[in-house]
Image 1 (cartoon, rainbow, N blue to C red):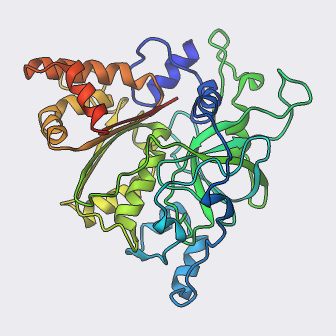
Image 2: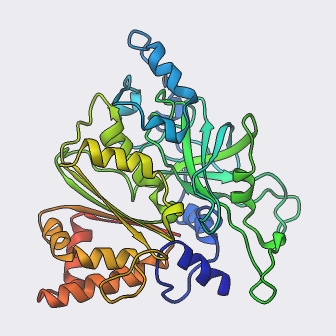
Length: 386
């Protein structure tokens, strides 16, 4: 549990009870999620989904040159006009097109370190070429099956690990053929010796972070409906709360809102991101988010909680729940007016956040249990933790 506590601290959240020592994709809860979602592969329109090509009439050499751009380079561009995919006309998201027993073999395009030298641990941005064969919506997840044998089931492959997709349906290449993952390398240190124990390191996260362009990766899915971005009302408010790699789906949301000029979704509401990490070197996609802040000040707000660099109003470490409390009156008013609120990250983030929201509700003379029930009933409450 010492390793778990350290992991929670590194991601900018208070250790509330038991948290897993694994990171995005290496938690056992990811395998259980696949089971609880009752993955089925019945015949759906998506089974024959193949037209994921750019409209040749609008394809330009400028857009094609974006394919090789790194995460940091993409922020130098203005809004990218994307040619509509068939995904835009679908009424339901694609689900479980490739099952774990018959995964799709995709190809690694690039692996890029996202954090600076003072970050506690490594987090990588990984672009995967799925050739348009594993389409997805923003907020969905891929299952990744690392190579090798399951030590608990000799002769069988490893269990699937779920990763939230960190790109829009168009991918970082804007052609609908790639997906991006945000992966923290899960490393275990013995609490007594302080030395790394490779035998307990996260199998999948280390495989992904060590991958090279051209390497093959087996993926299943896509899965998930909980974190889909509601697009019916383009003027809606979206409050996003993340710790560490939990920012992945929100990067997808924000690129769809502010980086892409798409055919159907013209966002003109408010997107408000709260991101909790350990320090400045641990910030993920900060250049992208900062550019949105500069370009769309009326539509985007961004608050960082740096637990090792900032103090809360009581002089303690600054965690995401402290930022939420700081703006609690405004957040509650937005929720009362129909705002959506999303939480993504280690499950240890939720108890502290829930306690903060409950305390604020009491101070406002409200019942948090009743309010939470109403938010869930209205489909304003979206949680995906691991």
